Length: 441
Image (cartoon, rainbow, N blue to C red; front, side, top):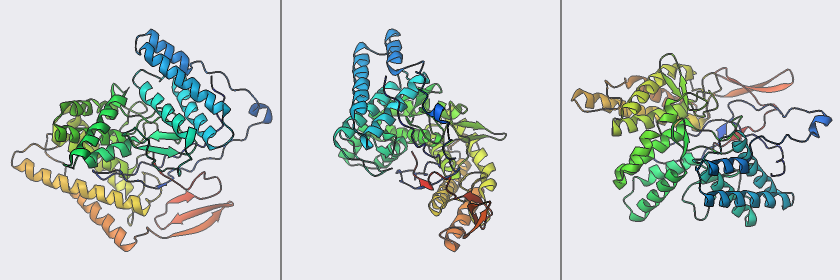
């Protein structure tokens, strides 16, 4: 068993940056909810030795082998890798490499302790261990939240300080979306390689294939899913299937809808009175405008392209809920980042505006297509485009009048410094805030 990992900074769930339909956009996130300071423990408790987990990495691997879920070769290779990383972390001098190896080990052990080290997720778990072992053996730490190229892997990886290098699924499928628009043979081969690796590493969650994140993030223990990343995965797979003429990608995409049809925390569905909000994170019921609107846009495209009954029904309920929620994001001269939360940053306001424009455009086109008997997303009379067109115009006006967002003033309340913007949203900017801006996983 590995040495206990040092306490690690949990990453704040501020929201995945909304993608255009073609490409992933690196972003800096506002913090939706400030993180509380670490609790102070009595000295006697601090010295207490951590309890040995009931379920261990090697123990769970042995169970998988006994059940015939993995091969003897898998067991041997993964056990050897785990022991090697554990030994390296233990022997490494104090510093970044040691911290990152311990962080990745702790994530692996958390997954095992939660009994979620399944045969389907194991390939991505141990690939992550291998990539980190090889990286920290000879390379320096990249910039936090940067995306270094990992030799031999077609996927997009991102470095999260304290968590090591992790597969960035949203960016991976965003790149696949971009490549699906090309006609260059080399880029189409890159597209095939990315999607084949994504299919190989898909794990089972909510009864279908999913692309899960394997590290701690804002109160979410690994593994966890993202409604936005899942919808972007489905979108890219449908596009790839059409582009390459291979039905396996489309078939996987349609099976992947299960994560979006299953309630949180297993899935990303948050059932509401009038429809379904599709959550940014399976572990948090924060309703984020840019992420939800991007997910609905992706589902519209998938529904229109496939006319799959399950996707059609999901799209209809999600679009209905988004339309109902729009007033809750509206601050009059700007938009809220999430319902009940503070205003969006200018970059998020721009992304939300672009998503409103997309929905305005496609729903306007649907109205014309439906009128002449052509199939449309949802397989029923299309939703009205008006609410999205009006909000797109409003957001454009906001960006023209106040491109940096509504002005803010500061005041002190009980010794804590607060920022109060002209919309009335209040956010704590005192010393207890762990980090004022973080990029998404």
